[in-house]
Amino acid sequence: MASSSGVRIVVLLGCTWLPAGPALARVGEAEVRAGPRGDPCFTIAPREERPGVLDFGAIVVADGVHPVWKLVLPKERTFPLTASTCVPYGGHSPALPRTASAPLVPGRVYTLRIEARPGGHVHAAASYEARFCLAQRRGGAVVRQLHSGEHDAAAAKNGVACD
Image 1 (cartoon, rainbow, N blue to C red):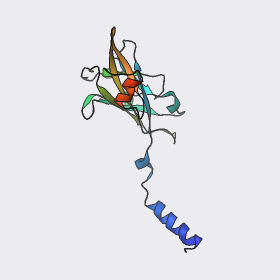
Image 2: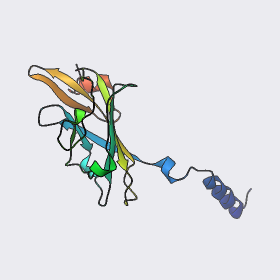
Image 3: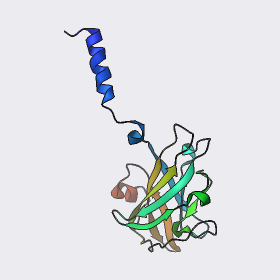
Image 4: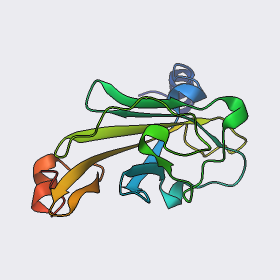
């Protein structure tokens, strides 16, 4: 039987092999909603908002492996990362640099990743992610966010079908 001090030494040595802080950076929850023109716009979930300086760094929308839109904000044109600020797909805003975007296809599931620029808040996430789709309806396509752990079949069953 090992002594309690021997066990403490083994535990402490084991902790020294753990990766440093940035490698364990937390991924927060992004939010996808319909913008003023009905197109998707992207932000962070309200519960992810933190006091202090944390800015948008980049936004990537992908259809699995391939990016369909990417926006990297220059440091001089960035803005605070808050739940009330929503960046439209394609950057269709006078305050944002316009970047090429592929058309979004109704029924296809997309992933969103928002990269944050480091700030002074220790518990802020380094990035925020979400999945979404455009569901085809009589009046056109409707933005639907798929929540964590929700598979496409379960989403259809719960009334958020993407087709």
